[in-house]
Length: 383
Image 1: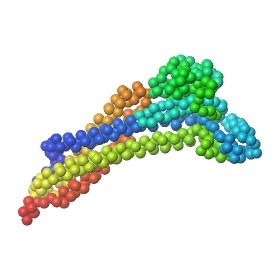
Image 2: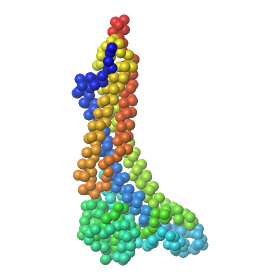
Image 3: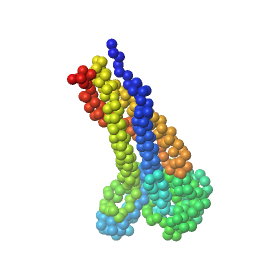
Image 4: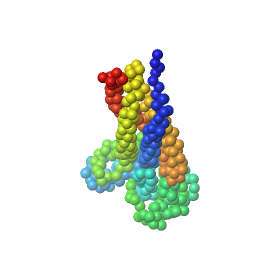
């Protein structure tokens, strides 16, 4: 009685060819995963600034043209100042609104592997205002002191690390010169910074609104009050930041990663297809011999599929073993010291790469099935 056809025989007897295919799969897997980790720094790093910070603070600057054409509830026929005052008074009266102050702002920049995000922070005129702002946002002073004079600022620890600054340096000297001195470092999950103005050196002026998360949709409030917002108006609230995150980070990075994965795996699939067709041609006589001694085509097919499963399985495992430690080394040795927020473990990406490998395995069914159809016994060959 014949025994089942072993898939391990080919693997053991053709180590060089099998090792080449396994290496190609594993290296492709590892490269795509590391690229994913690097690109995702634009998501992980900007996420606190775009999704968490605006749950506590918003920035608003509505133009006079918008106020002129808007029928603000309670000041339908008023001038622009009266309309704005009604809006502010109504907003201040809402439960959950902590503070509204007209203030100059600066921008703290955070660099990822690809891209940079700039987040506004206020310049208050008193130390007490800065203390209240830091308390509201949950930021803690960990080094230096709070601003006490014009041009003094306290900056988020992550921003300092990322931009290679420290307490005592000039903040964004390449832009503002020796205008804003960093006198303190604050630690916060949402990268909070604050300071005091120095004449008219700034990145704009806004109403800085401190609120709880329930009041984070300022756009909805202004629309409800009859304000017809336009592209010239600035309302940096939670919905606006979420949209920026979705368009400029999440979807953009996902598209880049998917494109890179598709291109790399396309070439891997073509390479594997060509290599496997060559292997099949070299084994025609072997398959014919199996058919001649009584094995059915589906049994030979099963052996071939088990061989490919072994190759792809080892490639997947080896790729995982290569990718995860490498990602951890890149994170701890390169990204963390540079102040770039990163994550080394992405199980969803592992699953996606596994699915791509299954897809390539499925494509290899084509040459396998063609070869199975061409199998002949010795008698058929002689005929």
